Amino acid sequence: MKALEDKLRREATVLSTDILKVGNFLNQTLDVSFIMEMGKEIARLYTHERVTKIVTIEASGIAIATAAAIHMGVPVVFAKKSRVSTQTGNLYHASVKSFTHGNTYEAIIPMDMLSEKDRVLIIDDFLAHGAALTGLLSIIQQSGATLVGCAIAIEKGFQGGGDKLRAEGVRIDSLARIRSMDPETGIEFYA
Image 1: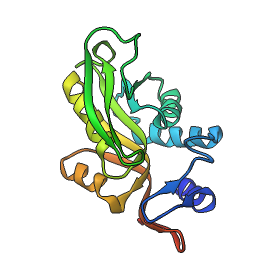
Image 2: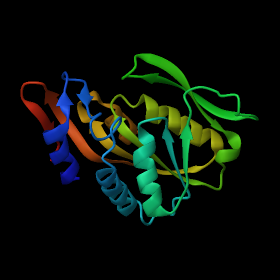
Image 3: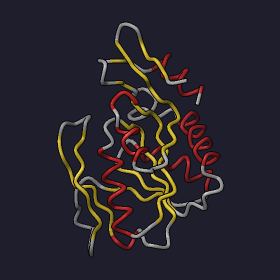
């Protein structure tokens, strides 16, 4: 998505060769109009897939998932990063190591929120090493639902997670795919 690449060049901050700060428009302050355009593009990419639910992990993927869900007319289910007192019954869960936070957490979705009847699209803000997607893929597999693909706002392609999952047969559509980034030279995208 050329508009996202342009926005990243203008508004993102490259903190290191591994860390990109997008908190001023994507995951702390939300540029809602732009996120709606991202959701529209995701809906276009998956228009023929008969998606019944969108799945993401709290918190940064929720806005993008919601924007896509509005355009697709389907609900969003998000995995919580810890169990809360209102969650009762059986749970799907998977351990996820967070690159950003440097910790491991349990991604949790109640079993009554996903079933073998669902056709699921996973959406997230970033794809780096693939840990969050791998956790969500495990939950989808546990539920018996059909995965139609994964839509990612920003893929840091040089960190290999996307390539590994594609090699396993997972459909991944990234709106912006970064080849490299450096605080001095900026961001380079795949063609």
